Amino acid sequence: MMRSRIRAAAIRLRMGRRGVRGIVTVAATALVSTVLLAAAPGAQAATTYQGRVTATVNVRSAPTTFASDVGTLRAGATVTLQCKVFGPSVGGNSVWYKLGTGRWVTARYVANVGTAPRFCGNGNEYDGRAAVALNVRSGPNTANAVVSSVPAGGYLALVCKVDSQSVDGNPRWYQLTGDGGGQWVAARYVTNVGTAPPYC
Picture 1: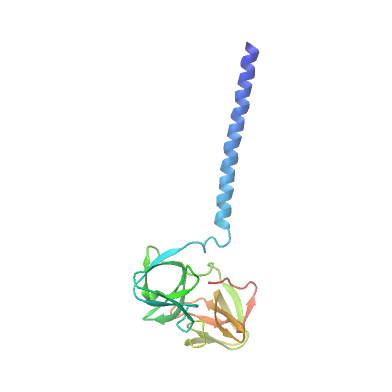
Picture 2 (picture 1 turned 90 degrees about the vertical axis):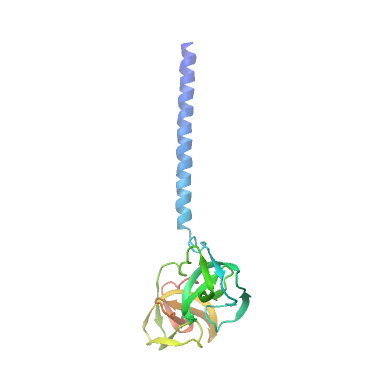
């Protein structure tokens, strides 16, 4: 009888330890999964925002009115927004929104539904050098206004890039740090110092 009780107590003790071990294992797995998810590349970019179109507006292939017209949004439409950049001013508003489709629309005719979108890029700056004396423009197109210039060899703080007007066979344009009317340079004349910036 005594031996039976001792054996039963030993079994309960082993099972209890396994249960605790199982709980610890599950908790550890959940913690690791959460950390990995938070650290996963592009996790921030996956966040989306909502906007409501306030007037009929053209959708563009890049954040400038000189980019190709690729569609139209009607007043009242609800759209998914990914992020924003500074670009050429439209009606006094120099913000452009990247839509969930990857296309662009001026923020002048989009009202935020809830939180306004974050700025495009990953929050880092990337180093570049002007390969030649370089015009800085209000948008990613040579038809956009020149807002400043950088001498050959001058330092450039790059945020992100878009595909827009091709310059000598290179369609990429870099957005620089700065605000107001936007700060854009043709990537054709920029030498990356280290890693190139991500897409906006």
